[in-house]
Length: 110
Image 1: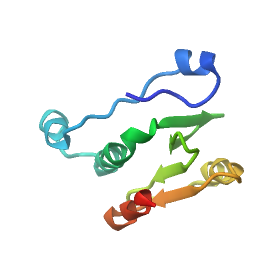
Image 2 (image 1 turned 45 degrees about the vertical axis):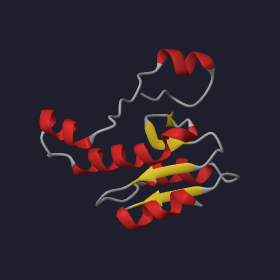
Image 3 (image 1 turned 30 degrees about the vertical axis):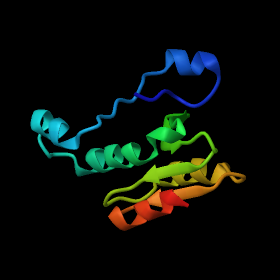
């Protein structure tokens, strides 16, 4: 489970995002309908030791920001809309990673 990135009140009052350790169990209960959600969950399992949070500003969400301030967006078969891209780019001092497929996950090891 991860909380929102930001001030303490934002973290406490905002909904948490829940991820599972075993995607097979998740898919058993929910079916394999949402590949994007499963792929995001898989990425979470790769970065969970980096204390990830999600970013949410003005109705726009970025999937993860890690303890070392790396911004990570998971895009399985989709692209940024204009508002999401603007939020992603607004974190100019941070390393940014866009993960679109299984091969991009290697970028998380750097």
